[in-house]
Length: 488
Image (cartoon, rainbow, N blue to C red; front, side, top):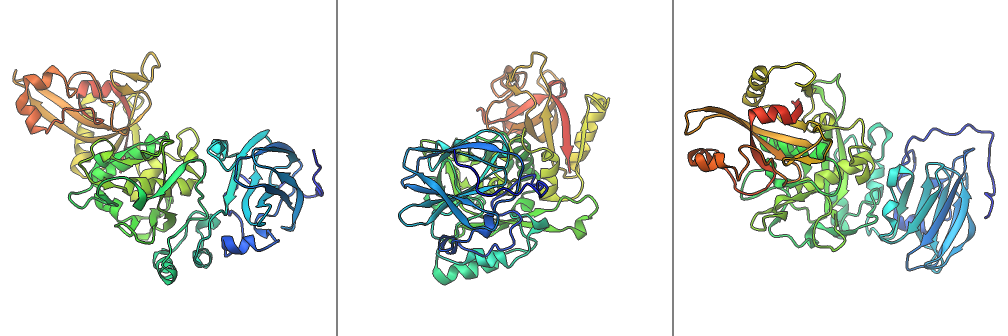
């Protein structure tokens, strides 16, 4: 192992809770081409640290890579090379940066900064790089494509929200359109690189009738399917808002239709309890339209339109794009996982879209009677509120019981008091699973005898006889199987 050339132990360890692609960087105007032509990497200069970490890099790229340490002034110091399919071990320090260049062209390919003192095995340039962002230990910066425009310079002129790299205080949509129009080029988001998976632009996806928002019908909460990330907290909110406040969703997008320049600006509200809706501030997140695919390349990996199951419907991509913008806001798709994203939740998702102050209560702990809970839900729906739910823990701690997923996010679409053919009054609740499948299998499920005995009710309530995640459940069973309600 080679030793670090210079280590200043006189300085205190800098506080870096998380290092994102360009966090705390003053000069953000350099394009990929300009960086490749510079020997100075002040953007990624190493910071001092008294901790150490052992890293092992494996080169799965098509190049022989030069391994350069980026010193405290941003200068590169060569430590050796990694041949293709070979390994390179190095003791280093958290907050120290390493640059990897193509040995033949000297073009910069990757910059890597460990942010933790855990032992790290890093695969470069292949789908084996699944752990690029695992647990936030590592952050990569990828400059493998020529941008063909000066969008980075345009964005560098704008004020970042709270000094964060992910969003702006003003909407850059018009400026980016002007810049891309000069060269008739497509936007590439250098700040949110495409790692680990297969990616395609929206225009390249094999989906019928692609659109951002539906053209033939209105947005509804059934347009979205949760993907490979465990972020039901986000999808239960979007599904509910798609059902009750579709215009709020539309107003977040610039533009609202397929963008020929392949980028979108998503407008989020700020998380500030002290601001009224009239005085709210906004954050603007810019994304390109690359979306990740499954390993076989046949389906979208993350959030997908509902015609994933019904090919006759329009392919509404708004949820895929909005989820990507949310992922960028939090620093990556992995950070959308419920276990990684505290304090983000259904609560904050509602605020980021609607603003204001959301409310939450649990009838299990707040001692709310069944009668009062029904009246509360009825009043909320009548006043146009959006309602999200969390299922309760089942007694056997199983993941799924009677079609109900434990501690999972659902959307509440409606309630109805009906009279059965036996002249019995029955209270029903309409609920949706964010997965777009796995419906409740108890009384009043879509295959149950209750609907067979009451065909008039099936027609009145527009029952869909398939497992699409939307189901009716008796109020008695609803009260048992759910525990928490959010509304705004």
